[in-house]
Length: 315
Image (tube, rainbow, N blue to C red):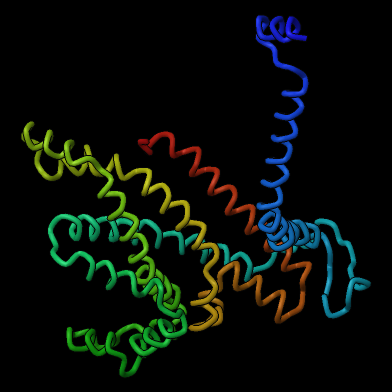
C-alpha cells in the first residue's frame, strides 16, 4: 500500500478517494449555489421571461381576455399587417422618435452642470440634492406642478412671456402643436438630476495627474475638456445614452397623468397606445403585436449603440 501511494505521488496522481471527496464537495457547493439563486431565477422566469414569451405568442392572435382562453383566435401576421395601416400607431412611433431628442439635450445639460458643480461650486452636496429631487419626486406631484406652470390663462410661464412682450403665448399641453414639446421639457427637467449624479461620479474617477500634466504642457480649459474630460467620460456617456434611449420608449406615467395621449393624439407614445389598446379597448392580441414591435425597436437601437460604441467609447 505504501509503495502504491509512493508511486501515485511520484506520478503526480492522487488516490481515487480524494477525487471523489473533491467531486462531491464541488457538487455540494453547486447545489447550494443553485439553492441560493433559485428564488431570483424563479422570479425572473415567472415575472419576466414568461410574460415576454406570452406577449410574442399572443401577437399572432385575436383575443379579448374577458372571453377567457376559449376566445383565442389565431390570425397569423394579420395584427402586424394592420399596424402598418394604423394611423395612430404610426403617429405614436413618430412621437417616440421625436422624444429621443430629449436624451442628448439633458445629457449635455447634465454634463455641463456636473463639471461646474464638481470644480467651481461650493456646497456640492446641496446642489446634488437640489437637482436630484425632481427625479425621486412623485410623478403625480410633478405633473400637478407643471400643469399649473403651463396653465394657458394665468400660468406663471405664460405670465412671464406676456411681460416679455409675447401677447399670444403657447397653450402648451392644451395645444396639439406644443403638447409633445411640453412633455419633453418636463422629462428633461426630471432627468437632469440622475444624469448629473452619474456624471459627477465619472468626473471624480478621472485621475488628477492628467490635468496637472496638461497644465504643465500649457493646455487651456477647452483642450483639457476635449482631450481628457470628454474621452474619459465616454463610458459614462455611453451608459446614460443606452439607459436614456430605453427609458424614452417606456414613457407612460407622465402621459397618463397629464394628457392621456391627447390632445388629438399629439402625445400618444407606443407604451400609452399599447395600454389603451389592451386595457381600454380590450384588444390583447393587437396590443401584444405593438409590444413585439416596441421590443424590436428597443433591441435594434440598443444593438446599434453597442456596435457604434467601439468608435467613440474609451475604456
